[in-house]
Length: 231
Image (cartoon, rainbow, N blue to C red; front, side, top):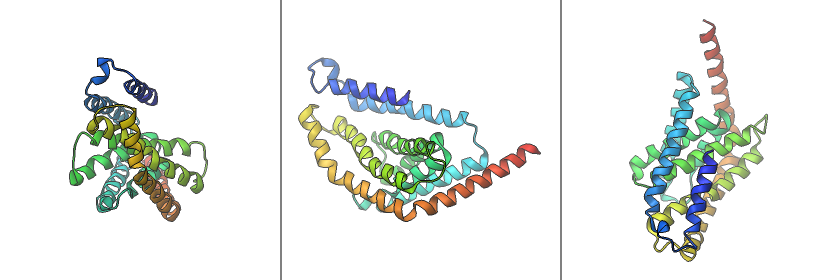
């Protein structure tokens, strides 16, 4: 449903590249922020309906805080985003809702230091969907597959940039046409590549260790919750 909604929005926006209709002169930056706000709210409501235990919420909050904290010092290095790795490894272990929440909260919290703005919902969505993508890949694997995880992390370095480019294009570029659209993507390619390569290095270096630690905490939380329910 969410992916379909995003596809429809991007399809309409894409028509604006080849149309002179006044509809496509709308404030797409504002429209996109409002739309993504609804999507983010829907994911958080889904997480709430998931009814996580207090201990699981605490661990998810810890991962979100860690993902936000590591983003701040690395902000001076263009494209290097350890946050992406932490969000995706959390999504792999805890699932779709938790992966999205960690990504969204990491973006929101870190922007209190790096700067809040209308780009924040876009960053929340892009990192959140990274957690979702990792969670969906995990469903197809009974064990942690470092190779597949690393490939996805590398791919998401580009996907993250491509999605954020849409915000940059509708928010800062005029006029909105195919020429400025392509120029925006060409200009971001080196930074997207740094993001992707950084994800590869971080995943290969810390992937197995972080997965083992987080999976161990998840098992402990599950056991404790089952015992509490029995009592």
